[in-house]
Image (cartoon, rainbow, N blue to C red; front, top):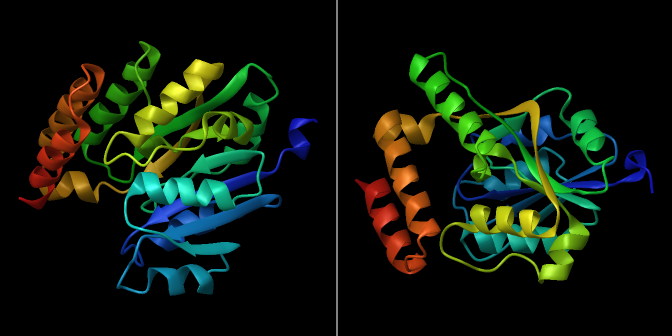
Length: 232
């Protein structure tokens, strides 16, 4: 099968994302691309907005990004699954770049470059940090729109229903099955979560969470710590 024949499914987990969802859905609209919104119990009309924007599928699942990602993957028809955050959007040229990377049969999956929708200098620092992390062999995060060949997820039984670090688990699946690539085309993400708690403070919290993952701390405990920080 040539890469032109590969079908693509973009899975968008969402929870109360009515205001942000339009960018994500419109950016992923393309011939041969299936867009699946998985709503985790929103009360703001997220699911209705997804239907009004002509998402190919709108599903409901229990809340939790891992659970929503897994539900979307299992409902998807694509040969390749792209996991896109609801407050992020793919930039022009993403589909051609993705198909080009997948011409190499050794490529199992990967991620896009990170760009924040802000002109503040601190976000250029964070973008460089994300680039450098991946360049040095570290994992890309979920806000970089991770993608994977469906066959590899099938072989691994899907995405485990973990409380945190589902994106890092996905990276491990990719690297354990073949080659992970970092694409030059960016995925643009809203800085709202960083703005709410401060960009550098949020970056430090994410870095500490990554270290917790790498040394194998209990995920439930780390998830509680991480969410307490988000609620402050």
